[in-house]
Length: 262
Image (cartoon, rainbow, N blue to C red; front, side, top):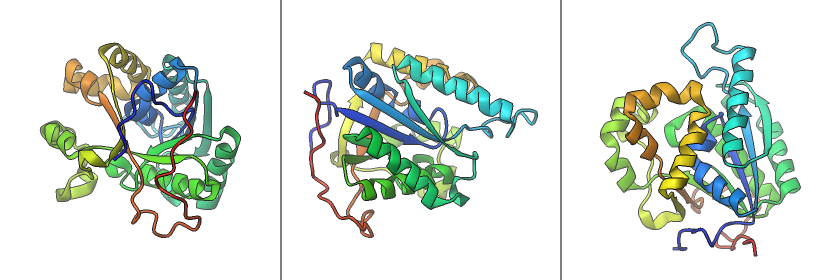
């Protein structure tokens, strides 16, 4: 396998494609901070503004709450030095039924503009099985196929990580969408890039998550601060498998190296 990426081996340009505000922080805040600290380019695409991410009936699905979550996202990205944010404009919870062709075209257009060396997004499982996450995975994979440049990396969990946090995830119901089968995970040797954050980097990631207060305050209180802080300490990514790309209309070598910054 490829050696996991370290501080001295980062892509030149990173594109993250996610479904909701806070997805990017949980799965890639440490990576984004390393990139911007090194003077490298980061662009984030978010499919929705997460307007249904609340149990408060007065705020659920409202334009006001969508605006609030956008502000949280911009503040979170500012914490890790990211300025280039794009929205696809889809409704929260509607990605799975949205126009796939338009979404793919929009993502491909951004790829052509920023020429990412690496694209990070959800795998087909969507980490939690959320239909919006899974739709974004499909859109991004197809856009990458059409674009034909850079490497596509899926956010992933290892078997060991899932086992370590099994009790916590059961209490949270994080992976209930998968039923008795549980979440999708991979062997450690399937991980192509792993970013194990230092204490200082973890503090910064925690600040990025804190900016998403509408989503994270209650969860961190439920879990306990130290558990919450270290929950996603390592950000892991894998390449798509040949099976996942079996219908790819534009075959390309999976092992092609990304363009590293000098």
